[in-house]
Length: 189
Image 1 (cartoon, rainbow, N blue to C red):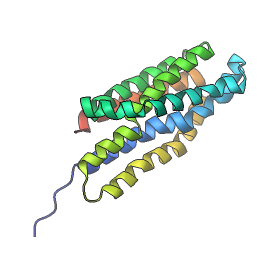
Image 2 (cartoon, one colour):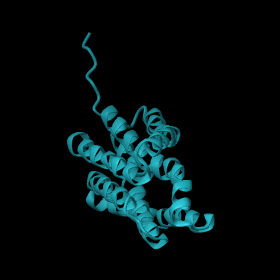
Image 3 (cartoon, rainbow, N blue to C red):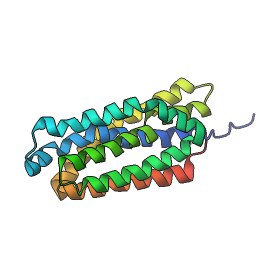
């Protein structure tokens, strides 16, 4: 009896899961760890600060169909590469904000990250690799968002306590570069 071959689709699931873990984990869970530092430094109202979340999710929601169209037209891999670079750029820019408008601009970029590396694109990629066991593969994939939501507040709190908020954002930017390398080396359409 022949030994079953390794199915590369599971590598795609893990890469996609990491993409969701990073993109959603930071944007949804990790960012709020820095709230008190930003409020303290800039003296903003909480409403001014939290408008960033509305902006991020409204843009990501409204442009969701565009992400699907771009993935169909140019490929998921190219979108994920762009999203990885955008994530690194956004986090470096976050470390340099001086105003609420600057923060909002960074959150527009983070909305684009969610479009390029988030749920729509990763579900499309994984679905292309699986016919049987698709439900299991998508379940593993979407666990990345929850794991990121659980892990990023802890990681961000440690970074914040150790290095301060500006240096923490620069350190977190390395995750975008790690994701870029994973996509370049491992992701196949």
